[in-house]
Image (spheres, helix red, strand yellow):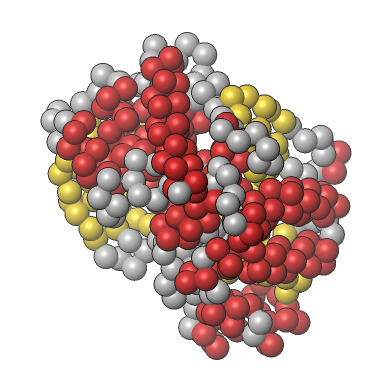
Length: 412
């Protein structure tokens, strides 16, 4: 059963848990849709996302003068403690290094510049989520750090406000991800996220039949930064046939795929959902692979997905997250198929597997809950803090700077 996104006081400080997330369909379309702010001809982005059973656990407490972070990886390796000052210039420098602690430094930069806060000490004492595998491990840590600042210093940010600061912190680093990664706070029920410039539309989905997934760590290598750089090279304006192909992949094609996926989930049509996974992967291999062959040919991913022993136990499969040789997801034929897939992947490839089961929803309550607000409106509960206007200015400045840099690269 999925742990709740929890926090609570204890004698040792504030207890926190944030899950990872799996993108079932629509990877990369979140940042692509964000470019509509400068090129309205780009279609909106759309993703279908579900939280994982695994995540990051931590205890946090205030510190008068420093930010002290320790992280325990899934394999038990302990990193840190690292000591960061509260000086914005130091935090910005650390964020721009693009190293392990850079995401946290980026989040801390925004928290200390936007709010009247001191430091904190955060011990990520347990992690059940593999890193760099497309499951938003870095985003989970970023959301957790923003949440720690929020709750320790009573900033009155909503969950979406925490997610927004986590996103702003991450785009200070060399990894220019979209907003989808911070959706790890939504839990086990799938949601559709639609990205239209700075507008974010959120819809919860009906699930007509229990969905059994296996998420497999491929124990191979991928470079998300390179994938993002090469796919984003054609934005906001495509200047070659390859770049036009990426626009089509993340635009019209993606909208059609995600609409069909939403229908199949609601109807409980898992065979069709599995076939759609294979179709989506084929499109990504052809159009995405042409733009970033060094990372997206992904020989390990395709070897595992095509393994003959798996086929009798799955409806379909595809890559996860930024794609490449990081992680694969398998839509299994019931719980028995889920067990068989785990056994085969472990026995034949020595792969670590995560099981994820999405329960069916009550057929009598299949109305989709839908909200459509601007990103800035999603950040705060009413009566939150007085820096709303300042955040909007910072976000606009950072976004426009990033888009101008990419546009200049595309034109040149």
